[in-house]
Image (tube, rainbow, N blue to C red; front, side):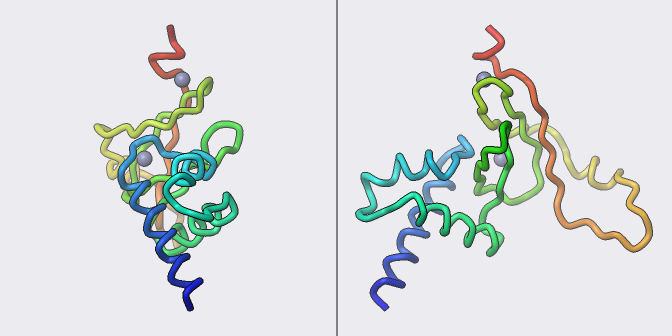
Length: 128
Ligand SMILES: [Zn+2]
Ligand SMILES: [Zn+2]
């Protein structure tokens, strides 16, 4: 029982961390930042909690370049700009993705659940 409580506390901390950042961190980045704060935290625990939060619909997974999984606490559909060089994931806030969503000509019988829109390019830092 005590173990269970500890795990949900870790999950809460991981979720709060995701809410507090726009970096779209990977499991490794979350682990590096939270291991000082959460005693006994392991990378495996971070992975497990991220998978669980994702299955609960609390967070979203963004697949960045080279297959790195990044995580996002913003669950509404929105577009991401992904830098091919440094891997940074940036929200494109001013794009109305509903227009794209509504414009997709789905065949009869198919229904929409989620739109994942990733644009790959170079960030200002890597363009220099
Ligand atoms: Zn970059
Ligand atoms: Zn995002």
